[in-house]
Length: 368
Image (tube, rainbow, N blue to C red; front, top):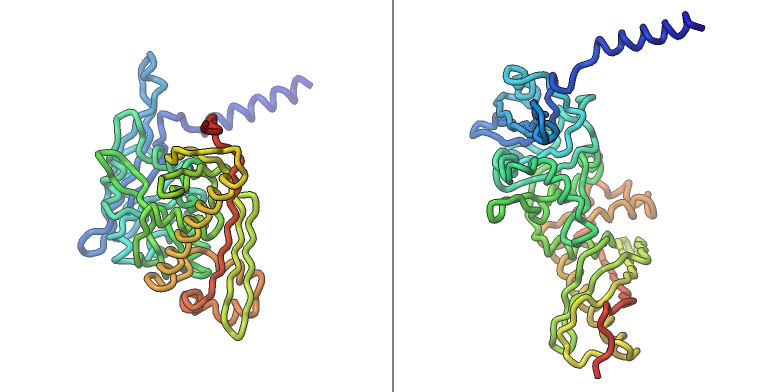
């Protein structure tokens, strides 16, 4: 028994001898990709460096950005080895591409190295910025690590419906191989701080337009991907605000009628009146409640009609991801027309219905 125990101890010690101390490696949390005037790669890599010494500062990680250039992503990554200790990329949380880079080469070219690399996490979130990616990863307070902050605010979808569901590197790769059109969360610098900035519309790997945060809200309502946030509406000419609790029901059906694609989208959402500027409020009257619900439904329908019009006439692409329902419900139609999905989506008829249920008025009830 003692011999067996000794053998396990020796094996453990051998394993430890090959390991690296945290201080001896560089933890990569974010990468920014820009393009030079001739299309060369300008790479920014954000590395967390554990602080040394004693006291509270010893447990607080700091970061440093490393900048390299090359003809390819791989060359630029390898050149970082000339400046710092071995980089561990399996902790990378964000990949940021400048629109300038995507204007020069399509997105599938830029992600090629990351998809092939076994150490890069496919769960890393992808973003596009109309500023330089280098500048994005260099913005913020000394306490906040920019890559971590970006990752955190991108997951605020339960607080705002103006945020697109985060898209990962793996999902981007899959979409580029399927329908080829999708939306990627945008980033910008506002008042000296990092901020989400609508979405960039990607078609066949290239940016073809930008949607505002308000457009993103309308897009989320179209596809039924609303997890929180508010709907500003009016009741009897006065502003009201509906706070979204959750989506109760979501149903999206497709059919082919006389060769034309039809979508029937039906949603049901619960929430509360978070703000009401109508001074004669009476929350306990059924008629009043129903009128409020209809006012909110009217606003949501208008918003959805606006985004459908933009998608079908301005972008002419199925960026909403509705192709998945066609693929599943009408596989023969999809197989025949998937190469011309943008055209077919632009010609499709979309019927949209929303049912809003107010289940809470907050602490205010009836007016006297």
